[in-house]
Length: 139
Image (cartoon, rainbow, N blue to C red):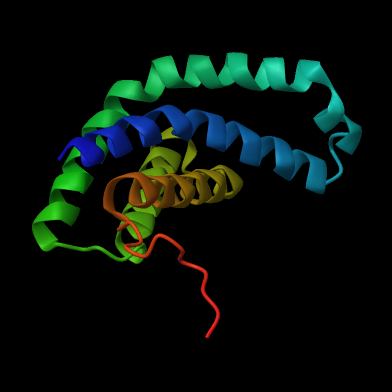
């Protein structure tokens, strides 16, 4: 249970920063922002400031939904990465529908961020450790 709580807290903290990073990359890929902005320190300061504001705004709802999702995943004993990724996408889609149901790009960004956070949760909470001390062996 300790790993699951750490996974929930980790994904709750990572979610707003992931959304902002994906939104920034989307702006760069569509040509609305200069790619050299990724090399500027100010870009990351702004990302951190906006992400922190997003974290303060969305921490409790995200934490609440993540606790429910983790409980359901644990109850169903879903150990593959597909379960947490799908649940993360659904949570992201719920936030996207709440924030701007008419903006399809926002819904896609939040769904992708939810999927990434679901994978982060899987890596922290569920993924089994390799029993072999040298997992890369040649036959």
